[in-house]
Length: 220
Image 1 (cartoon, rainbow, N blue to C red):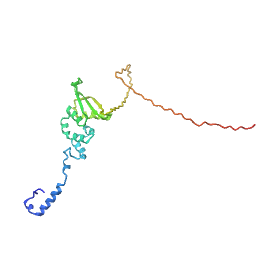
Image 2 (spheres, rainbow, N blue to C red):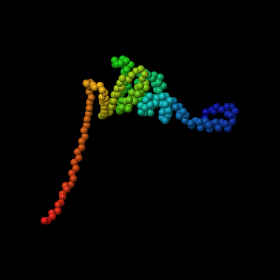
Image 3 (tube, rainbow, N blue to C red):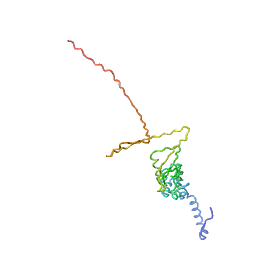
Image 4 (cartoon, rainbow, N blue to C red):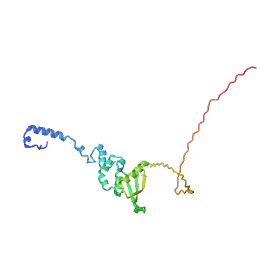
């Protein structure tokens, strides 16, 4: 053992020296790394949700989109910087990068749009997209953009990298018509609408045994 730092009156007493050595050996066996919760790369995974709550990155601020443990750790490590620059294009772009959703932001003056509008393009590589995820991404962008700017469009590129790429999608839509006292005399459709239909039919033919009726002949 290393030299024990005991006061002179205790150091000269062999009993206290033995007791101090026993205590030092016991204390040396205690794992103190569990107390180092802010070493995000080393902390146990069970502590990550509590850290996410402390650093205010739960739900739509990023935690909902973190699919892997490493993404959760990276999000926690970048939480302070994300909040520091919240309301800037950098914050929107950075949070998408952390969550493996690389995106590109185009501001209104770059594409000749309306003032203070912007567009976001996101690439999904070997990932799917549904309606809930799409609108959740919109909410994520709203969390990190500034209040003045308006999201004009969210463009999602679905990329399949495989020997035999397979991409499938489904589209459904509807139309609501409200008839008021004012009658519209003419309606113009300026955008094509594509409809798809399918038909499935089944015919069942049943053959029963032939029925023979027996008639008794009554002599006259």
